[in-house]
Amino acid sequence: MQIEDAWNAVYIQAERLKSVHLRELFATDADRFSKLSVSIDDLTIDFSKEKLDSIALDALLSLARAADIEAKRDAMFTGETWNLTEGRAVLHMALRGGAQAPAGDAVDAVRERFLAYAEDIRSGGRFDDVINIGIGGSDLGPVMATRALAPDHDGPRIHFVSNVDGAHLTDVQRSLNPARTLVIIASKTFTTLETMTNAHSARDWLGTHAGSNMAAVSTNIAACAEFGIPEERVFGFWDWVGGRYSLWSAIGFPLAIAVGAEAFRSFLAGAAAMDRHFRKAPLKHNLPVLLALVGIWRRNAMGWPTVALIPYDQRLERFPAYVQQLDMESNGKRVTRTGGGVATATGPVIWGEPGTNAQHSFFQLIHQGTDIVPVDFVVAATPREKLGDHHALLLANCLAQSQALAFGKTEADVRHEMAAEGKDADDIDRLAPHRTFPGDRPSTTILHRQLDALTLGRLTALYEHKVFVQGAIWDVNSFDQWGVELGKQLAARLSPIIRGDEATTDLDSSTAGLIARIHNLED
Image (cartoon, rainbow, N blue to C red; front, top):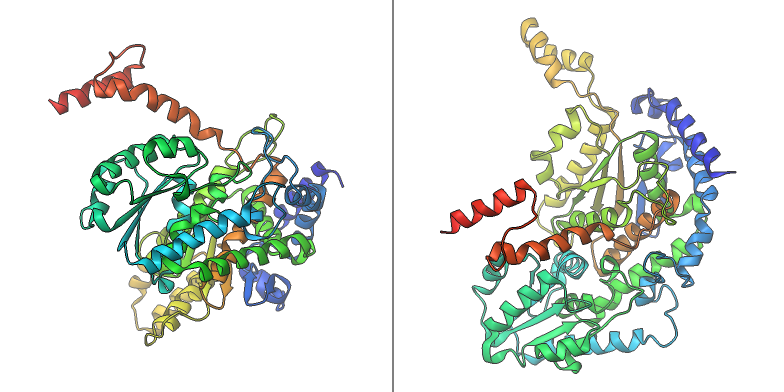
C-alpha cells in the first residue's frame, strides 16, 4: 500500500469514529480490553479507552507498514547513517547492549571506568555530596532517573544544576561543604555556554579543592585538562549518542554514584530488554509501535495537539519533563528528512505532573474544558514501601480518572442523583449543567509491577522507541535539534550588549527598548 493511501484509510476510520462515544464503543464490545491492550512480562499498555477500535487499529498498522517501519528500525539498529543532517548513526542502544557499537568505540571499557569510579566514590568516604552540572540531555535524564530510584540511594547525596540563572547554583551550594563535594561537569564538547558558566562559578566555589574535587563527562579531553580536570577523571561518549539519548552513557554517572553499579546495570538491562522486544515483536504486538500509533491517531487522525503525561508515582515527577525533551526536541520538526515540507502535523505538546496532585490543578480542564487532551497514565501495581492504604488510594484515583474521562456523567444521571439526594427542582436545573461530565476523553494506561531500576530502564526505552516510530511515519529526522541553535546565537550576540561591553546597534525596537530598561533598573 502507498503511504498516501494508508493515511487516507486512517482518516476514513477517524471520520467513522469521531461521533461515536466511548460509552458506545464499550457497550458494543465487551472484549475491548483484551483486543486493545498488550503485555510483555509485567508491563501492560491498555489503550482500550482511546477512541479507536480493531478496524482503526488495523488501518494504523497498515500505515506503519506503508511507512516501512521495520526496515527503518533495522537500519537504525545496524548503524546506518540515520541522522542525515549531521551525518551520524543513531546507536544509543549500544550503550546498554541492545545494538552493536561501531568497531573501535570502547563502550564496555568506558562503562567499566565510570562505574568503577562511582564505586570508589561510594565507598571511599571522601564526598558527602555530588553536584552534576549540565543542561538538556546532560541534566534531564540523570535528574529523572536519580529521583525515580530514590529508594535505592545509598551513596552521597546527588544535586543537579542546569539553569544559568545564578540562583540555581547558589541555592544548591548554600548548605554544602566544598571540601566534601564532588562537582561533575557534563558537556560533550565542554563548550555549552550555560554549563560552562556554571562550571566556572563552581570551580571558584571549590577553591583550593578544585583540583581534586572535579570530574567531567566530555569528549574534549584537552579542554577538560585546561580547566583543571585530568584525563583519568574524564569520561566520554560518541557522536552516535544524541544528548537526549545519553543517559545510558557516562552521562548516567551521577545515577551510578547514587544507586551503585549493580542497580545501574539493571537499569541498562531493562532498556536492552525493550530494545529486543522492539526489534523482534510483530507490529501488532509491539509495545513501542502500538504506543506510537495511538499517538499518530491522536495527533493526525483526531487532530488533538497535546498530550498530558501523568505518572501516578511521585518519584516519576521528572518523567514528564524528560519525555518533553525526548519527544518535542525529536519530532518538533516542519521539514522531512530530505528537507521538504511535512505532509501532516508532527510532534505534539507533551506536559504533565504526578497524580494525585494533577487532579487538584489542571484536571478540571481535561474533564470539562473545551479542548480534548489525551492522557497517558503511568502507574505501578505495588509500591516500594508499605504505608497503610496509600497505594490502594493512589491506584483507585488513577483508575477512576481514566474511567471518568472515558465515560463521564450524563445530565440525566446528574439529575437523577440530585433528586435522590432530595434537591429541589430549581437547584437541579441550576446545577445540573455544571455537574455534567461529557466523557469521551481518551487515555492510555501503562501499568507495571513496581518502579525499580529494570522497570525504569524498560519504560524509558519504550518512550524512546515510540518517538522513533512516530518520526519515521512523519518522515522527520528525530535525532537533530537545529531549532535550539538560533536562540543560542542571538544570546551570544546580546550578552556583551547587556553587560555594557558593546553599544546597542542594529536591534529591533523591542529588544533595544528592553535592554535600555534593564540598564535603567540596574542603576
